[in-house]
Image (cartoon, rainbow, N blue to C red):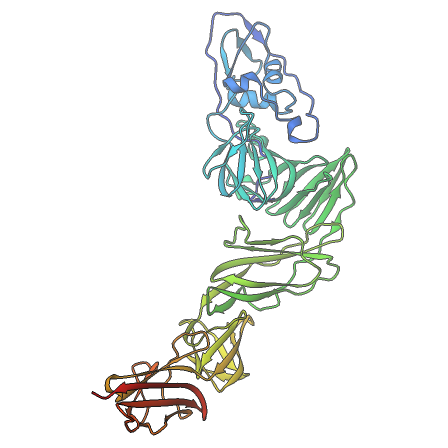
Length: 540
């Protein structure tokens, strides 16, 4: 799970205040009491829905105080009193409550919005017992829960434009802002019960951080980029890529600077801050790699430079540079600085990679690399049986995209556009996009196959050429091409028509035997037969 822009992962969301009107009823002076903190643990420990939250209001009774009301409406919530005051503008202390008046318990404005989702993402409203399907634009309120299932992803965007990105199998609980409390307005709280998150705080938050509670730790991050994970054993891992984060467990508080991380086991103190692995560099130069696909996909190898001390690597591949959703999230990879993909479709992608320590801490992320897979027009030839292979009869001709600085070689010799491969056998074509990203093709040139037909009166032979896959093969002048008459058949010069797929030659059949005459033709390539045809015709 990930979080974006300067908001901390636990977020107190802004609520609308309601001011009860004056009354002749007796007024009660409020005693401002502090409530005890909630019990740490799973979401069910803090997500209790009371009847007043469901109703949206509380009716003041004799003897009520703000503290007493808040404790009833939001039991166990340390911010319940601030929440009550945020929803109900009562003016300066002391507050006087009017018996029979209504105090608001629910904000009309959502605290956050589900800004992106990739099915399946479920939402459980704080006022509902069951989970439901999430929808883009859906408002999220105090104590609403967001759960991403296997293969899913979501982004929760808060009022100050900070965002929380959730990977698959994540569960978070959203808290709300408190208007009127400057610290709380820009801070907040999210409970990460399980999974991974990436936090990025919005600039408008200023110096305020964001709070994330997990089963084993309390984290307050002042950071544009912090990764927090909770595994099945409830161990928390925190990696700071920007700014700072305070991590507290079992009463001990440590501060993590950029480039440091820690682990916290449930019921234990945070481990000493550990330096994170540096950001891996890419094996290719520049911010963009270009690949050229002759079909719908291409085989590519994404490579980066090895990082000393890395136990594993995590590679993320996404269709946009926000990494809201992943086409690939190899987390973690084997301990090798590359990832091979047999079939990457034509399109635009973004990649980043991080080293992972033996302790499971995520290292600093690499610069984002853009991968463009463009279609390569095959004017002669066709895709072969293996990835990145081409087969062509007589020649293979490739047309490079216009406007791209692409260098082409055939068997390590420079080639121009179009790239024309001739000569029977296998040839290696390399297409380099100017940044060391290379598309390599195994090109096999073979003799054409042919079919033979005869025109009316056996006066003309029609020869059509094909490649081994049965696709039409077209070519121009071909000194290797020959044609022979068999059994007394005489044939003239074979000439191409149109694009060179069809060739024709005049024919004179053999002498008549009884009441029939016969034309038999053999087509050769470099003297070897590539087709033979014969036809009899009755003499009228």
